[in-house]
Length: 295
Image (cartoon, rainbow, N blue to C red):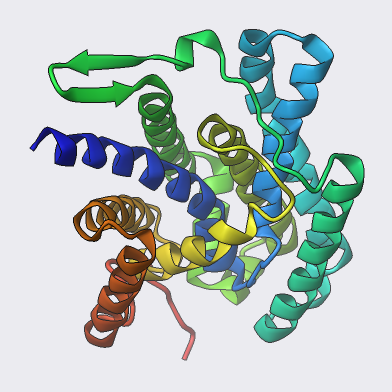
């Protein structure tokens, strides 16, 4: 039993990483319909930011704390640049955004190879995240618990932002009806840019947390982008709380089935089969964002 409990806690940590990767997509894909295949590279931008700051400061504790806001700005700036130069010209053309952003992801991967190394780059953890709590045979790792709490704090902050702030109200108005929002004086182009910056920045912070569990290499983000899209679709496109539920269910199912079958590949196949069956009965996902139409 203790083995399953330990694996369940690992599932929370893994689900938290997936949640941090998917939160930004829940905004950009949900609001703008942009299929951003470079989103995984925004994760890496955050992870490499932590690595660079560690080299500069030579202090894991300070570098980690500083890297969280810096990674948000760095990844957000890359996302804003992508939106301004390319994606802003491709709205209402989702297949074109898929192709363009896939090409951007390859460019960024090569850039990471040139700036860093093709090999796995380990990022030392702060000392206060390197241990664990033991309750008999049950072990809770400090880093996984931190990622779980950090992800929940970000979700609550994002939900409050969408509900209470002017940006959140503009975002919700744009999602419900872009043309009507424009007629009311809302600059949907400016809203799109801010939303893309926010979604990319969230991915950057997720990359910092990812570096606590695994090392970083140029193709690491590719392994998370498919899962992130699946989680957004299952949760309900553009719905934050649906994304939360889907991420943790996916993480727990992956870890517990992997333990049961002693094979992560088998667990992944079973999880995706369950998702396909679920979407047959509920194609809109767990929740759906209400929209309004002039028709």
